[in-house]
Image 1 (tube, helix red, strand yellow):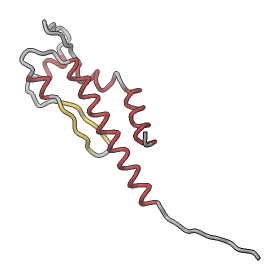
Image 2 (cartoon, one colour; image 1 turned 135 degrees about the horizontal axis):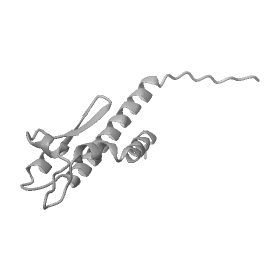
Image 3 (cartoon, rainbow, N blue to C red; image 1 turned 90 degrees about the vertical axis):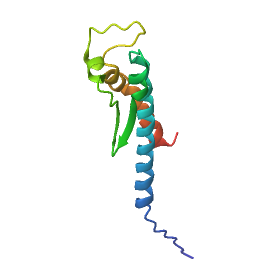
Image 4 (cartoon, rainbow, N blue to C red; image 1 turned 180 degrees about the vertical axis):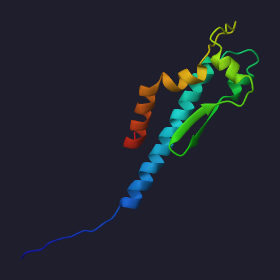
Length: 113
């Protein structure tokens, strides 16, 4: 007796949906982590600038930033010396100096970890 079982299933949509969801989760986590690094390096006087730093996820990108009008002065002023700590390039460094950590976050999100 020769029996064959054939199963035809197309899970393409489910897989695409799962991947998109994992990417969104990874980007949200990356945004939160980068936001934390930026806030940790922000010079603080009143706390307005630090408290204004946030992140958004748009498409396949995560962004950190602030809408405080003097933020560019603080971000790019390398001569800035603040008595309460912090440093220039707090946004740039939060994004650029942790690339391997962000890559691992995305790998974990895509693997379901």
